[in-house]
Each structure stands twice: as C-alpha cells, then as structure tokens.
Image 1: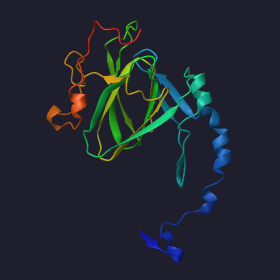
Image 2: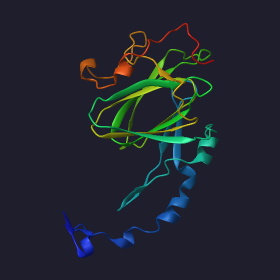
Image 3: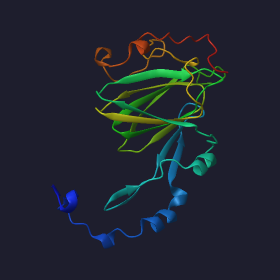
Image 4: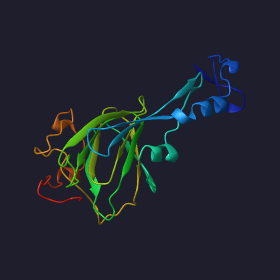
Length: 219
C-alpha cells in the first residue's frame, strides 16, 4: 500500500531495516571481477551473456555493460548507438533485419522489460552456419543478453505485452543499406511459436524477399 505523505512524497507501509542494506559499493567491488557470465551459442561468434545480479532488500545491482569484460570475452567493439523499441501487443514481430556492408552492424541485445523470442540467421557465406538460425528467450526477469557479430539477420517476437527491446550497434543506421529477409520463409523454417495469423508485424516485413542460399550477403 502506498500513500501520499509530507510534501506529496509517496510513503510505503513496508518497513525496511536500513542496517541490513550494507554498503553496496564495497560489496559490488568485491564481486566486480565476476560480474558477467559468457557462453558460446551454437553459431560461430555468437555469445550468450548473463550479467550477475547482486541483491539486497532494495532490489539488485547489475552491470549490464562492461567494455573491459566484453573485450576479455572476445568482444572488442566500439558500440556507437543505443536503440530501444516499445512493443505494445503480445506477439509483435520485428525482423528479420540487417544492414549491408560497409554499414554492417554487430549487436548486443537485451530486454529491459518483458520477454521475447529472439532469432538470428547466419548470412556469412564462409561460415559453417550459413543459412542456419538460432533462437533464444531473452527476458527482463533473466537479464540475459545476446551478442551477434556482423553478418546476421535479426528479429524477435514479443511474448508479453508492453515489452521493451534494447540493443547496441557497432555502426550507425543507413537507410540505403538497411534491408532484411522474410521472417516466415519456409526455407529457413523458423518456429516463432505463434499462429502466423496472430502475429503483428509491418507490411514491409511481410513483403521482404526470401532467403537466397546462392547469394553472398556477407563474406
């Protein structure tokens, strides 16, 4: 229960033992070297990241981005732009998108609110994973992230209403180089976990070209 107290400030009836909070700065620095777990996904160069959370009675603290630790994990990239999408209805789909070279984008993906099924397709001609896709649930509850290098098409479908999807990119948006492939291409065979008739997406994404296995999207 929340009431408006003195000077219009909200007051809560849940008591908090201030002494139990401790010094979050000192406890955080003790664990700073273990602030993120990194594991390899099935497709080459793709990494699954799980920033650790350090809880107390207030909630938790988490380093969601640490350039030094990412470099140690092999992600030595200068991200130049942060993007955020709000997706109102459940089963909102965006994708599959990418930018052609020389404006190809590596991406670091996360979900500050809600849950998505995130899907990537390997478009690197020289990759053993060319034409293959990988999917993973990203959520605010888990706090997990996905890193994808240049050379992938990317898309997601929301599994909760009012989902926020955030991503860092390694190059700026270029309308001339921005493109994509069909999310429902039968050759890719992606299972979005939803009846296509119930999926909300743009006409542009529905009309994108099919994946061409003979095309060199990226080297």
